[in-house]
Length: 227
Ligand code: ADP
Image 1 (spheres, helix red, strand yellow):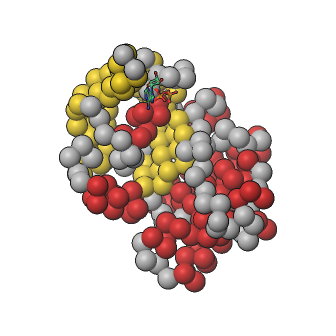
Image 2: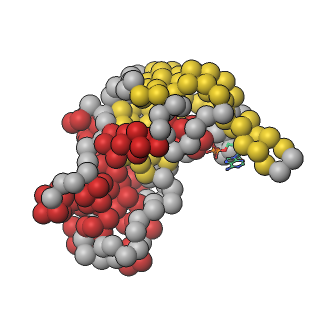
């Protein structure tokens, strides 16, 4: 489903050029649950941004479900993201002028789903992440953990086939983290979605079926994990 062939990403930083991804090749099948680990600066976020079609490689080829993210035009990339992708990044990008229910509904509204249906589905997700009583609150009224769960609900609301999350349990207490992890897996199983998580958490990494370790822009280990 996801294929990276000899992908490079350089960043120009002043006089210096940073080789953030160094000849990365990788195939991820539908419904795999992949944890990506490695020290800060090793290229994890760069890899996630490329697979999400938010950034383009300096060299190499990336395809997702047959769509070349390297050559697709912006309209095709937008369509891909709206239909297929659920994203949870560290800064949750929730809209401050919308309440929690509206934020969570947004991916559906952008697809043209009628507002009543979108709100009903959003409320279902809010129940699953334990935020029913926050539906009409605004983002600034939420704790960090609640914002994170709102972002997770929004990432799942349109039943994406590919879910990419950067430290999805980073700000959560142990109980909330376990609940979010269970939820991510449950939704991934229901939809046969592919789950790619960047994590520093041993518990999250242990839940994955495949563990990819990165260092200095390269994949240094890639193995299946026995469940
Ligand atoms: P990680 O997510 O593993 O912490 P990143 O993918 O964020 O790593 O970064 C990989 C390398 O690329 C680091 O050396 C980082 O400093 C550099 N980098 C990331 N983004 C940029 C950018 N926009 N401009 C310049 N350098 C960057």
